[in-house]
Length: 286
Image (cartoon, rainbow, N blue to C red; front, side, top):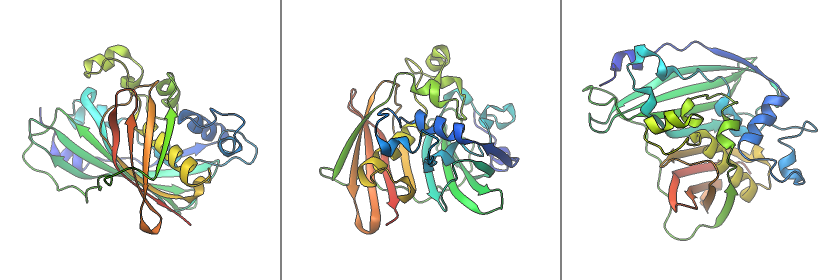
């Protein structure tokens, strides 16, 4: 049934104040596959407390307001929701430990029709304990069973498709079979990623990987291929989740260099030859 536009658009999010430590920072990095080569010094800086650095996409699991779409007041069929797009802009380096404050709001509620569903876009500003902004995140949630409410907003500027032709760089990263069970310890404990019965109810043959985990794996591929594991160069990362990823698959990450430090990318589940991340853009600092 359709969601209630006014209720969802004006949803009240409490500010989330979160303290995280070096263990949390290392857990996130392990969850996106860093450290699989424990002798690689580039990876080790994100998973070992000696000179530890936070990987920038860890921002997506900090100040998280919780799985609010499960609240009955939203009127959303939460079992059928999927992550549509994720956008991230980093304004300052994320400390390896500290306090952050997440301030969230729903900026767009888009009606795609009763036969297609709805899209809810949630923006989260992440601040440090002094109030300085560390990152701005924009998450699109595709509510597959909730369109047809007859009103709504237009969406943000669409992300561009990948260029034609062969990529400039290609990086293949294998996702461990237990990746979803490990990654969910960071923030998102939606049973879709752990419970086979819930996954079947949602139409999947088995639990799927978190979109934000595959997003982090793509960031890992860019930092490895373009930045020699200096993740502080990553200024922004935006993508569309085009198909689910299953733990145990290999992501083939294709990257195109564009003018001015811009990148375009897409990722393919190699075993199924299916594009799972599309319309990807990233910006690198010099």
